[in-house]
Image (cartoon, rainbow, N blue to C red; front, side):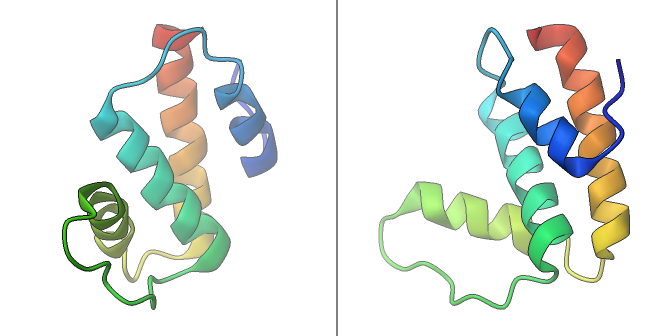
Length: 86
C-alpha cells in the first residue's frame, strides 16, 4: 500500500516491525527534513557528534531539491522499505 501523503508515510514508518539500516534511516531523515524545511541552513555540528554530523550531511546532500520532490521521494522510499520492514 502506497501512502498518499507525507504524513501517511511518516505514520507508516512507525509501524515497521524491525529497524531499517542506518543508511536507510539517514535517507529517510534527509528527505523528511528537505520535504518539511527545505534546504539545510543549520550550522554544521562540531566535534565528535558523529550521529548529528551524519544526519546533517544526509540533509545537506539534498540541497536544491524542492519540498515537493523530496516529499515524493520520501513516500517512494517508505513504500519500498515497507516491503522489507512491515
